[in-house]
Length: 180
Image (cartoon, rainbow, N blue to C red; front, side):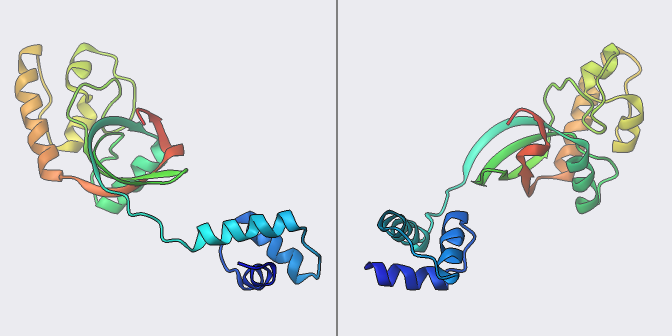
């Protein structure tokens, strides 16, 4: 690409790459670009015009804890009666610097915070189940009365999580407390 072609392409540039936008604005204002700027612009324009390779989905099993805003957003978008604070990523479809596109479901494994409200689990029963009595009721799973009920509770919880199913979402990296 010649210097003249590069300058013409810069004038027509509609993208958001800040370097090229800055150079385009200089050209539009009548400023002269150095040979190094023109060469860099040509490389960037060439890279920008190439199609991005499609990312393939990757199967994973990664537990994460998300912040309140994201959990509440999922609750509203999915029509859930609770906000899922602990999620398991089952498949990653794409990534950007700020977010991950993934298929997620509620976590059924061991957690240190409540699955539904994000509160730290303090008593033995809550730590064993991953839910407190209030959130258990919201989820529609009968809470345990003694430690012998943990196995039954986990089976009921697994069934309820399966009923809810999984969903595809963009997860902002800023909304992940731990795990990503």
